[in-house]
Image (cartoon, rainbow, N blue to C red):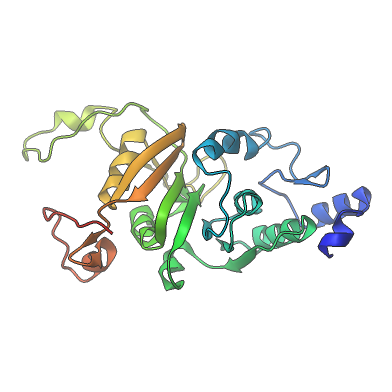
Length: 267
């Protein structure tokens, strides 16, 4: 379907095509036809975007965007609507990718979509001005590995979102603790990740769910500076000290050369 034909597309036919593409997690408005009108979270993810978008420039002309875990393409579409140049959405689920391609085509938007794991993003050439890493972190068995991999692709800003459970309070942590210090681990505010052995909310891919202090600690540990927190589950970050002696933290770690006590250097 071309962009020109989409404007005159029969709503009944469009509804049928939306249905044929399977259950949608992103509720998109395709020329008046919603893709997930009965979403259990409401008008999702528009309800999040209305808060997040205030921290993103209205004019993204020429900016490159990487949308990791793009799902049905909502965020890719919104970034393209703001004038972004190249927009690449990646996911590992063929159903979501087919939905995203259909949505972009229906709306007449030039967006790339490809099947790729978050653990493979460092194979992409160059960096992106904006990297969206939303709704993926808690689905990963190796979340910090993924975050350290994603950091290598962030040119200007990372928009990071994850499910959060436990305490939403942030307390300062000491630079070091004695081996005999145990009481801090009983504090609900101390950085913690909750491991889901079997399933949470009917989803066996919900592996690790952090509290807020854990999220912010991990973002800093990966060399990012938090510059915004537009809503409860989302953080806006910039690369700050993502390299040490010209090498990324991930590369040093996998080579067995990472020394946590060394000062990192700006990107």
